Image (cartoon, rainbow, N blue to C red; front, top):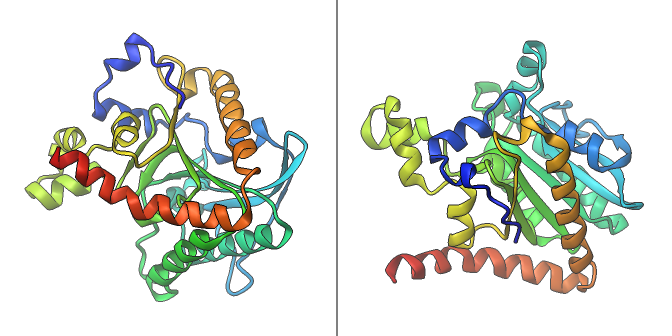
Length: 280
């Protein structure tokens, strides 16, 4: 587990962490790929309908070894935001991710995923193209893979749109990332019929890295520089590089069957562990 929290960071409220997770200058999947990997070869299209740019994926080298990298992409400019639906994938994006996962399984490449999405795209066209089925199939596929899978929540981790890339042998979170069943605004609107109470929702949702580590939902926290990852991304890249190398090295020693069984057991026990802690 990576701790490394500063006294300033310890004082941040959950709502402040949500704001940092959504910061427009926060490093995204494209930045992590450029900083941590070499020889990245992007692969596009779902081989069925179209290409969805909100999922960025391909083959790369990590410390000289081939890996498959898949992550959400929000973009930087207004044009990119619109093209990528602000990081909310359509079914074509999840089917592209499935294609890359199957390829990784075939060639025995570890998979690294970067999670940063408010949720799956809720548009009518996405629903017509099978959004729910695409997410469910991605979850099922990822659950049964026999290669190492390390997932990193880098910004927002919202609902099934995030979980579709989150079924890893190890799940890490950046210190100011958040991971939850829906947005704080959505939570407040459903529970209190008032989306303006989103800051209050942040306090009760247990969506911060510290909360989820305590509950056993994630396996480690990557420290960020004071003020958030965008203030000094190179420091973050070094910490993340070390954590990924360590996790992949440990997972590479396990057999294919042990990797699949361990991932299955991890998620089967997750809710039970949280429930026992709540009852205690």
